[in-house]
Image (cartoon, rainbow, N blue to C red):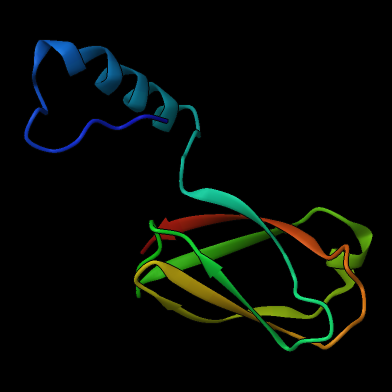
Length: 103
């Protein structure tokens, strides 16, 4: 989803971008998402995402059987970052898709 910068909100050049963004949101699209793989042999994994804030809710979806079996939780969120807590495992395939939601 492409959202035009503030200040040019209603310029003719940006009307199509606004329409696309509204349609994407109405049909479940979001650009507040990404992928992360847990750091092997560690108990935390930091993730940098400029859309994250201190009040962001991080929703995780495992992308492998190893990820689904991993005990993982959101340890903290901050402006531009969040940290996942988990067990220390040698597995390197514990991949997740995440979505950031405002509360």
